[in-house]
Image 1 (cartoon, helix red, strand yellow):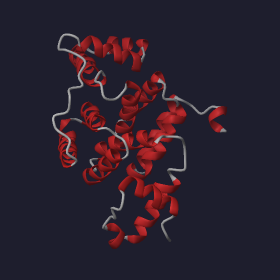
Image 2: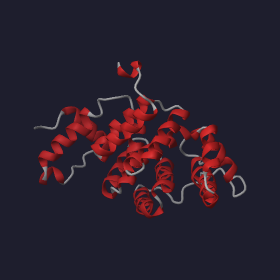
Image 3: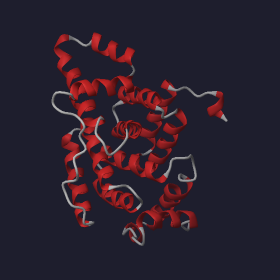
Length: 257
C-alpha cells in the first residue's frame, strides 16, 4: 500500500517535511493510518482546518497524548492557530480534566511557544473579577445549559452539594468560559471534544451536546467533529459520542440525506 497523494499533501501542510520515525519501523501502519486520517477522514464533512486542529488538540489533552499533542501543536501554530488560542485550549481543558492532567500540557505548550520565539506570559485574557465571576458565570451557564435546566439542577442539589454548584458557576463558567481569546461557540465545541475523548463522562457529554445545540453547533457539526477526532481517540469513544448525539439530537429526514 502506498500513501495517497491527498494524504501526502495534507500531511505536508500540517507537518512540513517532518517524517515520523515510525515510517521506518512501522511502515505498514503509517501508510494506512495516514491514508485514513489525512485523506479519507479529511474528505468527509465541512469542518475547517482551524476548527479541526483546535478540537484535536483539546481531545489529545483528554487522551493524555503528550507526544502527539506536541506534534499537533506545532502543526496548529504553523497553520494559523494563534499562541493565545493554543493556550486557551489548554486552559479550557483544566476544569474538565483537572490540573493533574492539564499540568504537563501547559508545560508542553510553553516549551513549543518559547521554541518559536513567543514571549511569555501572554497578555491576560480574563474578563471577570472576584466580585463578578459568579454572576458572569451563571449568565454563560444559563446560555449553554438553558434557564429551565439550570434552575432544575440548582433546585435538586442536596444542601451539602450546593457549594459544588457555586464553584461550577464561578470557576468552570466564570473563570474559564468568559475569557477572551476563543469565542463561546468554539469553547463549547472544545468541551464536547474533551469530554468525548476523556471517556466515562456520558451524562456530561449528553449535557454538552445540548449545550452545543443551544449556542449554535448543530447535529451535523457535532458528527463532523467526531469524525475528525476518530483517528486520534479511537472507535469506542467516538461511538459513545455519536450515541450521545443521537440521544439529544435524533436524526431527522434532513440529516439522513
